[in-house]
Length: 241
Ligand code: ATP
Image (cartoon, rainbow, N blue to C red; front, side, top):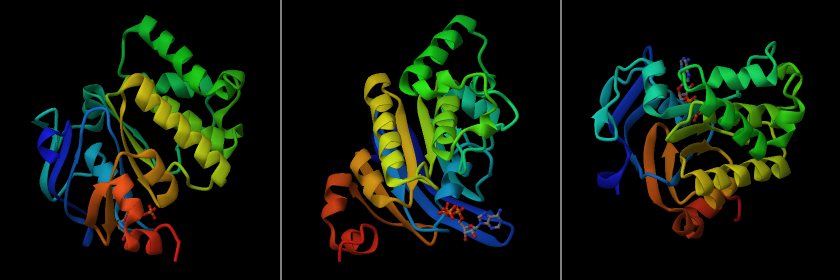
């Protein structure tokens, strides 16, 4: 699988000072796929995404995108190359309007007409953002801020979206709604998605392929259909036993 991946990590290690957060991660994401990394609190999920998007430089390993290394590139260069990050906790700009938050997502682009079309595209997926376009983003609910963060990432016109824990702080119903729209975006636009999640149930239903992360290491990987049938996953991640 990793051979045909558009995004490929090989033996990637990252740390915060003395704290090793991920230890030899190898994974692959094929073009057009939805891939998930499952793991509990502190497993290293956020660190994987930060390392891909260039916020954190790995100590070791290789990250190839479209066959070229992106290790050491500036985050803005990585966005321009087509990888867009929806950070943990959304990080919308609370004092800017919803519309201006969306336009911030397009800061690397100069194609004004295409940006205007993409604004309408994200309003199509999340009509509430159009209704609230002129309001400050800080006034949105948690779910609406998650919709805004995803939409802001789409405004960069990405090939790949890195999605950090979209379920965080949201009700199961809202989480389900957001995952459904993410899958629609993947199917309709061909956007490749790498989503890290604690909510295994949601992630395994939405994704094609999954990796399980424990203490900074991948301990299991398979199609999501196969992962859902494994006893360990049922017991520890789906709470079914
Ligand atoms: P969560 O859902 O809680 O964010 P996670 O799986 O995303 O969990 P990471 O945030 O990647 O986990 O953290 C992995 C490890 O690195 C944890 O042990 C965490 O305590 C540590 N860590 C994360 N950020 C920092 C930091 N800024 N400084 C020091 N240690 C950190």
